[in-house]
Image 1 (cartoon, rainbow, N blue to C red):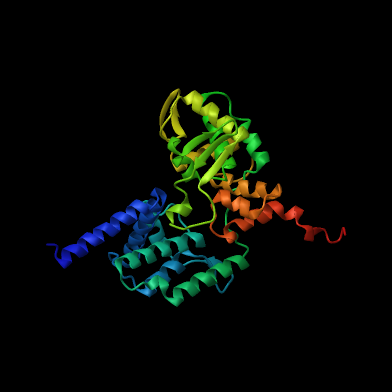
Image 2: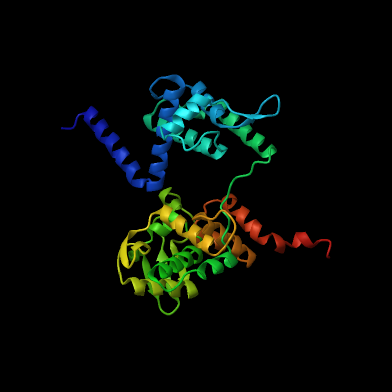
Length: 345
């Protein structure tokens, strides 16, 4: 017979296991990093061990400690004491001295909020004062001219230049296939490229391949969209992928792998995918801040330039909200907007 308190413990363990299984590796890592920083900051700031629930005043202090604002004399300032800042950096908890971007602060507050919800304790992050301060901080940043930092988009011109750096060595074949796959299949995230597996790839005659995207960010969130998981890899992208698969010789497991001279290793990590994109952009002599997300933003921008409809783009990218993709779409389609030629008419 299972007693009620035993059942409660078993249910709690089941919930923890479910959360761990559902979470992406990157998400789990970022949550652990955020909570580690909260614990380190709290101890350095107050000399106490962090326990939940956290008072609302502590969350507000955290925000003003890390977000820049204009002081009365017009200078930019923040509240984190210099000695605390140095302690956090010396301990390896904080990467460098100085304030954070608002996006980083929002993420850290969101992680603390999730921790409170899972512990089923009063959540200070949901208090109106916290939301108001973050909202006003965002408005103030916009007024100062601060804009979100985005990776430089890899459109067709940049992609062609990067592909030209890929020779017929094993590394060159892999990188060419990776770049083409990531771009042509709908601007795949670096984590999706790293997770690409042979079991989800099937040949469709002479046209190319269909890749079944089983591990997208959208699917991990448990959200149902109108898009289909099947993503086409056709034409030049299919040829590049075929060349890599023939040269590598493997028929199962990860599609894109680490290489040591001519020895093929395990799957690339998401970080390694981003490094490959950066390296090829540098070898091509491209100027900009390139990374794994550059393929995704570049795909949307290029598709928009070529007149592809927004629904068709979103079906491949797996974007859930129009607001998430419309910025790239508008950037690519701005010169073709008929409203921009009213004077010519």
